Length: 139
Image (tube, rainbow, N blue to C red; front, side, top):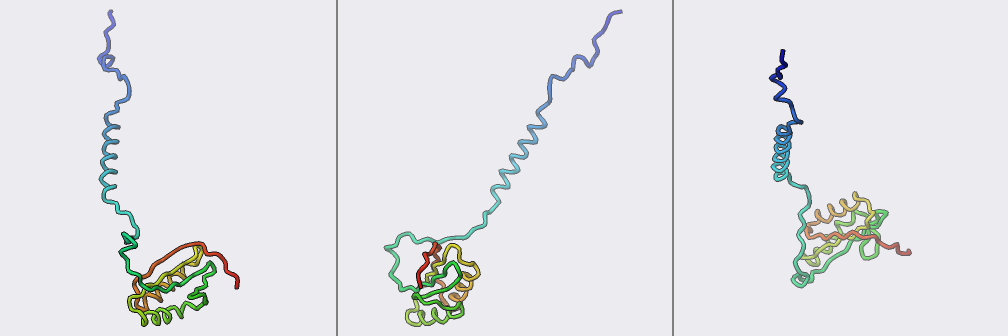
């Protein structure tokens, strides 16, 4: 008797079929491209001035918050509840006044927010923030 080759011997597999895996990868790629377009990054919108020459010279009052959370204005330490009174007094002199808050890089955020709230309650919306490391001044 002669040996006949089996029918399945001619259809032997020569490796892994990659077509289903490629379909899956293409579908993942399409999914991530589409979802990346609709993801919106959270952040703050900052309106920076274009040139300093265009800005009028407005009088400003500077509140300084040091690392310990102490608030000072004109080199005098004040309580955060007195901030509103100082701003209202300054605003009475010039209604177009601007307020500058200079906070130490390590100042407590609660104090900065409290000062900002008091300034806004006084009716001033033009607040400039500056963060820096303040040098310690001798008393």
